[in-house]
Length: 245
Image (cartoon, rainbow, N blue to C red):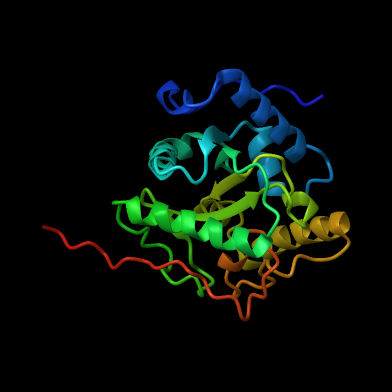
């Protein structure tokens, strides 16, 4: 049995979490904890965040609803404010009641990036200057609420076992914590390789969408869909910096 989440530490305000009945939210969160904290789950960063309750979780009705990007940006702003009061590895996680089924993974890749574009269009905070605005760059991170983020998704129908989950879920990981916890290239690559090895043992083959060196971009792996990083083109259109009035 997976332990219930402890109540210590930052949590989303009640005004953020009341859009879905509390028992349903608890059900989905407990199911997610069961997946992530199961020993074969490959992502060591996610396991650490969940073991230490160093994450914010929300459940929203529908990924595609017009009001959803505003809710997620609101959560991300709060996350940016409280993250440094959390443990060494921290994350924001949002799951959705809809869509219930995703059968076409290339379509899911387009759908995810359409949602990320909506977040970017709505966001009025400056881009996190520590990270590139070009998804083709290895140091790209999607800046939201002024904080660079790498995105991981779990969804029904995912071909990767570690990405398959009943409720469509987006995980936002700030890469600032990577260098804070793994200050040298050797340490960081070692951590990444351990995750890749665990994922390969679970799946039977490596995930070709994920970067293999520090020079490879992260963006092709955001959706979890099987894409060829060399030929994949990111549909995100980054706005130029807003001019001060």
